[in-house]
Length: 142
Image (cartoon, rainbow, N blue to C red):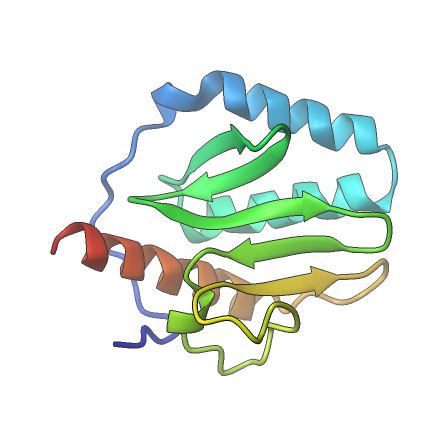
């Protein structure tokens, strides 16, 4: 079953109280980058939170910001030339705007590589996050 981008997620089951320290670690990571990558990571983080106000922020794998709601939605990884958002179950999501441009060969994940100065289709990205949340909720209810 594929979940179209833009499908609303009606059930909200996560708690922000559980992740205060992780949010602080992500704040610290953004501050330490001190360049376009930090600014972009902060912007992407804001879009994820707009798309799902009940998202849980986690700090995993020795320094990777992770956004979850009934399971991992996506990660925010920073590299020298890209900021990468990897969607844990991206292969199961419709991507009508063609945002996925990395990790396209796998059966599970899909990613978006953002480069310095590139324009972000905010509406399409938020719809993709919402579709990922809807998929996670569907899987959790099974």
